[in-house]
Length: 503
Image (cartoon, rainbow, N blue to C red; front, side):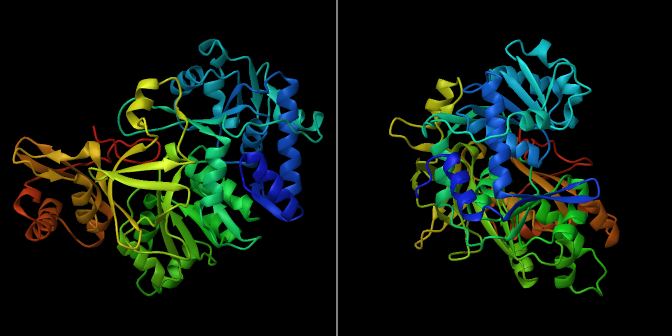
């Protein structure tokens, strides 16, 4: 059966995997398990509660850490023909208030981390009418309790859903400018789930690590996994990352390069008497076979390193505006250095090297931003990603940089700063790097890895980094050479997806 709505995904997986475990999570000292039947029942009860509160068809914000309550809230919203607005729980209250107001949310479902935000949210967001606490409403006057609403509204629920109506409004966290509300329909998300090739057996254990409000985690980590009958273990906090890998011992996980690089550095700096393969497996609980990586560039050397440790890293590429996956390596077709082949529902073309996408996963547009929408999706329906790339003869896609980051020299030569950053960033001493034009120079600003320097008795960090740059420059044409070095003693400012803010 073709998947046209998120409700189709839930119906299909609960029919096929009713009594299998859909989710595991830690509550106190216990590991709680929820079956696919319970997932459907709980999410349908949320839908019934929302309808009873007069919220069916409204915009409803969801704010909290990754949790089972968050997931059933999201499913309950979208499957009641309402619009879910997932927001970043780590944003300061003032930013959350602004996004809630911009989204015209009628209700907010929030968790216990949001006491500061919720304290004056009704005053700051005049369109907001209803507050629902995921865990406990006792400390928030006037808030409904989600567990109580679920129990009071037990029963089946179904309503007609238009696959092409917006069901999710996701705010981007770009490295520049004001965040945009990406309008995604049921069809957008369901098509992405259906066309993303992942070969796992029902019951395969995965661990959900990334923030749940990100489209990559929500679509690929949750919706895709449940469509295949997977068992999703929820990591309750990055502070418990290592502990939870040991508890759940997953076979599969989704990570961003920053986390992969951090684990690699820990293994690199571990006791040399411990075999790297044992150290890698220990870091991931001892049973990990596949890491799906996305969100940023990943050094291909790390793919090789973990492959030698018995862990395959499959790199992909996407953006929220495409629901989000555009291309991915998979178990059937993989090529190091590439971001895989485009999904079957994604047409790709290049406009002066810029990657352009057309297909059923391309967003409806930016919420209440017609000019920005027109700048991104042309009159023929092609979404201009802003990413530069190429495709090889076998159909594998490669990302070479960002169009807006291009450095255009007075002699007409173009430089992709990402190309230079990725090459120099391979050096162990380089923790973070940003390349820019500075006057007549191409400057590399580097935040060095102080721990690495200390461990390897590097006392003159500037000289050591200059040596790295000199080695890089030897193989570069004159116009691509780094001619200035700037050191930082603090990390770069980053957005919520941990990408460096360039300007």
